[in-house]
Structure formats: C-alpha cells, structure tokens
Length: 483
Image 1 (cartoon, rainbow, N blue to C red):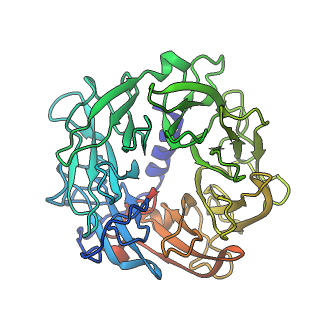
Image 2: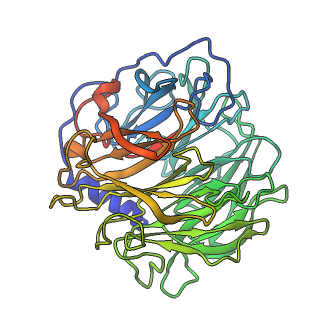
C-alpha cells in the first residue's frame, strides 16, 4: 500500500465518532435544461456543479460505505437546495452498501457517452466482486436534464485480473478521436487501464488498452492526472508513484503523451501525491504542477520544508527545457512560514480567480498549525502570470481569517481538499475548501467568493453533510471534491 493511502488510513483511525441518520434524496434542479457541453455541468443548465465525497459516511445503515453529495450551480453560485445524494443505497445506483467500500474516495468527471452532459465516475476500489478475490468496480453516474440520477458499473471489456480497480481515475480524449476515454488504475498488472470511449449506457466501453508503466518507466502508478501539455488536441496523462528504477525508490512522475498511436512515455519529472495541469503562463501549453507535501528526503527529492509544489512547464514537444520552478512557503511572496509537517501541496486545483486569463493554483496545507492549534489547516492561492507561477500576490486563508465562518481547531485538516471552479458563470473561479476531519471527522466544506482581486474571505460560507441531506457523524464529508 502506497504512502499516500497509509497517511489517509492513519488519519481515519485517529478520528472516531458515531454515525446517525440515513441518506436522503433531493431534487437536482431544472428538468428542462438543455445540455451545455460545459465541463462539470451535470444537468446541462450552463452552470458548473460540485460533487462532494463522504467516503466514511453511512449508506443503507452501513458505516463507512460512503456516498457522494452533489450540489448544483446557479446564477448565484452553488445552491444547497438543489442537491442529490448518491450511494449504493439508491436503487438507481448498482451495488449494495457494505462497510469499508468507501464509495466516493476516488472521483473524476467527463462526458463519457457524448450527450453533452458531464458524467460522474466513482472508483469503488474496495468493492469485493462476489466471493472472489477480485476487488474494484468503476461506477458511472450519468448526467441528464434532471442531473445525476442513474448509474452503471463498467461491464465490458474489463481487465482479466482485478485488484483495487478504480484506485485512480482520470478522463480525457487520450487518442484524439474526439471521444472521451477513461483511465483507471488498479493494483494488479497492468496497473493502468484505458477504457476507450464512447462508453454506452449499458457500461460497455469501445475497447480496453492496458499500459504497464512499471516495465516501461519503472513508475509504480499510484495517481493519475489528465491534461493537454503539448497542445496537439489529444489529452496527455501524468502518472505518479515510486520509481522502482531509482536506488532510493524515489517518488517521481512520468508524462505519457496521448495520440492516435497510443500512449508514449515522454519523460520523467518531479514526483508528488497530487497534481494539476494548467497553462499558468498562458503560452498555449499545459504546465504540470505537482504537489509533494513531504519533507525533502532521498526518496522525496521534490519535497521541501513543510512541503513543496513544482512547476514543470509544457511545450510543443511535451516537457519544456525550461528549468522547473519549486515553490514552498519560504518562497518570496508566499504568506506564512515553512514549518515541518505543514503538508503544503497535499491538494491542488487550478482556475482563473480574477479574470485575467491566467490560471491560478490553490494549494492545500492541511497540516498547518494555526494559533497554536495543531493541524488546523490552511489554503494558499498562488497566482499565474506571464512569468509563470510565482509567490507574487499569493493569498492565504484559514478558519481564523476574518470573514471565514467557524474557527481553527486542532486536527480539522482545513485544506485537505481544494477546488477552483466557476459555478455562477462570471468567468472567475471561486474557491471551495474541504476540511474532512472537522467536528471529529464529520467534515465540512467552505465556499469563498471571488472578484477582480481574486479570492476573498468576505462573504464566505460553509456547510456540512446535514445541509445537503447527508447523515450526521463520521463521514469525512469534503475529503474529495470534483466537478
């Protein structure tokens, strides 16, 4: 089991609470909406929506079965009254809730059937297949004018051997044929499986391609991130994990270039545990931002004091020859100080927060101590510019920031997840922050508004599972955000 999962498991076992209540299902919004084709728009009304995972939540009276809450976007932003709860307790979703399924702790989105509505993909990697020794299913919940209502498990073709299928997920047009494909990791060989699109409503993919990343590059795949680096129209894929060809088994990443000829390794770069691909210097090529929350060690060469993010710039050839840029909390302009255990870079998201055309990067710092409260957590927003990503103009937010609801408490893990998204269609991305350990593991989500100067704490709001129809108690509500 990789270190990222070990740390997650450790956090799970340090927070305990009893779950009460049951799952509720509420309406999603306009049934008359036409498909917009906008990424992250589940109900086709032209506004981006948000999926919020609660992987330790109760479903069908089974603790830690997990569920996903979906909140729909409107002209006024995300509207909690327009929401849906998705779990295996829903008759329209395949499977049966079981303790330890952790439904929702792996999510991605994409229009898999090409109907213009964004679909939600859930990797249920802990799901046991009957009484066999195989584990892992991938569930697609289809977007529609009524929002996310019905789902199907991928049925065919499937890998011959399955162990933890759905461990990682990413969607994109990897072969450049204009149809959305789905990449899914497993802990059996080959680790990387590409389901060719379109995927039918019956759960059948157009084909399956296995990629053995260990044999090809030495990288034992633990996380995958999709994006277009070289601007050729085909989606590329970043594969992250330990490099078995390294003497220290160092954590590294490798870029696989997409195209009609199939995935081709295109060079190794800084490793980490989260990443995002965005054109932060607006030169037409996607830049790879990797986050490594660990300290700098032989097996963590891209860690740093309290964690670090590294920007590897893109070019027409793929990875640019430009020297990668490493940013920590000790970088000029970044608020605060770099302290061991901060976990700067634990979570990442990209979006243009002030409408200047340059994507900015939200960085989760869930291990940050705030006013003497251990691991209360913080979020730093770094600014994109013609020079690329820098510390200039960076902002930092905690629960103690004026205007932010609540107060910093020990072990809240504020910043455990981050999402920059434009839910009200004003061409500026708002900031969404998850604190999965808030209130002894119940979890919570904070919504930050944005303006010409970027993200602001003024007018920030927050809510927990109960506000969107979820059960109270231990759930890790907000551990994963997607849309």
